[in-house]
Image (cartoon, helix red, strand yellow):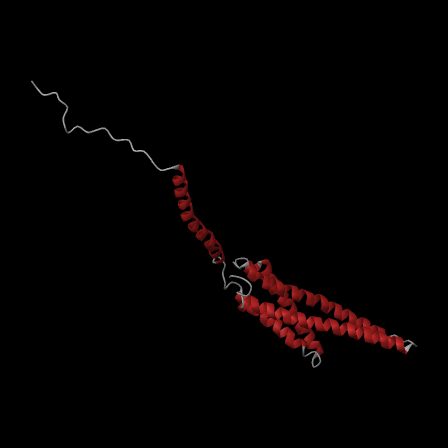
Length: 207
């Protein structure tokens, strides 16, 4: 008769596994895991600005910037020659001023050949500052011309009061001189801003 006794090699039932740790220990373990994850998240956030800044082209628009700098510099130098060749220097400076406004507008507005430039906005602000200086020069140049012709017309009028004529001449001369000085200052500032845009792009920004 065959032996029906269960085999000694039969598998024993799996033992139940219980977690004997306390709730406080589980909470402490979770806190440790969270603290390990924080540095990784911080490193990702810190790397985001670096990746964003690397998207900009640091060499874009330098050719236009060099042309803008040279044109403004020529206009300033020629303006100082007004006493020697007044008519020639006036027209040359006017042309240089208009060309400088056009070039700085192209960079600032991103039109024409600058529509594909990927400039850092903090770099583009130097071109905007140059444009504002040149526009103010243009406005003050018109004011200076008006003052000059009004003064010339006033001196041509026949008057019997010499004292009033002298006071008028002094007033117009002072106003004209003040406008000319401000125009020269704006020219120097425009050259500085154009130079920073072209060669000093890391000034005041992380380009």
